[in-house]
Length: 356
Image (cartoon, rainbow, N blue to C red; front, side):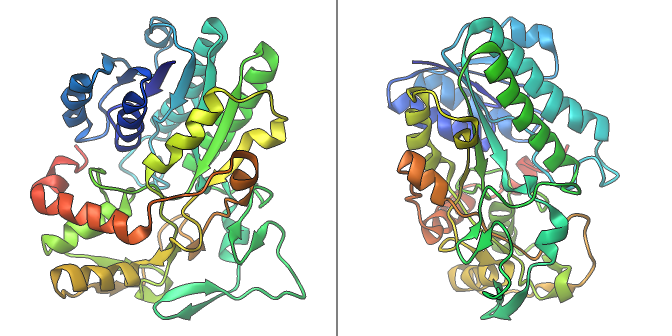
């Protein structure tokens, strides 16, 4: 099958591309190399047989000129929840990249009659009810303390399901992805091509371009190994905030099924994909792992709050299991060890992937 991947030289795009090439698909991808370090993935992908095109999804003419494909996987995004509000990045550029870019890809799918898969995010879920969830610190991590007599809609011990609130505020980043989801479904219905929305938990693995605002697992491990300063921000400066963890190669089995899926109801086209509660860990627990792996080092306790930060978010992938018979297969310790080994082999990785 002919697959077009946006952001193919990013961590997620390149990982998915390698797996799909190995499965025998014809892979074409494009990238504008806006993410520092992404250019290093071009030559290895080309050697595996991928066709790489330099193009910017913000420009319709460049997308319209791309060769025909049977399916598009949209793996391109400015993935920082602080994008557009941190004083370092432009809100207009964020919207152009994450939303206008999606529209350009949907127009491509309309013209080529290609299917469309959006790799979306857990950050489409509402911040206010997330911050209001009752949590308690247990063994260095926030844990849900739900009152069974007063259940919270869309949340259980397994995490957030797809019915959890998506009302604003969700961050500019989250809003661009939520708007992209809605437009993708509308385009698919209006112009009769298949659309799937895969809301992903925190994606991580060896070769990820880690920064403090995105790619936190890779950033933390690389920084710990190099003994760079690290801080626990917000929530008392304890590092108790919790995220789940998923390797992007675990998405490939469901992508293969979606390429060949029969028509589904719109409500079944959106599903969470996450390592789930079993994969979840706090920064403090990640530090404990790093200390055992590399040796101890201090982490500064800094209670300074960051915009849009939340104490706990874990996605419940029960729906994905029911519709697609999907389960993650790469456990968190395997992901962390892969990052650690990559960090040891690439001592300049943080500098390579630092913001330009």
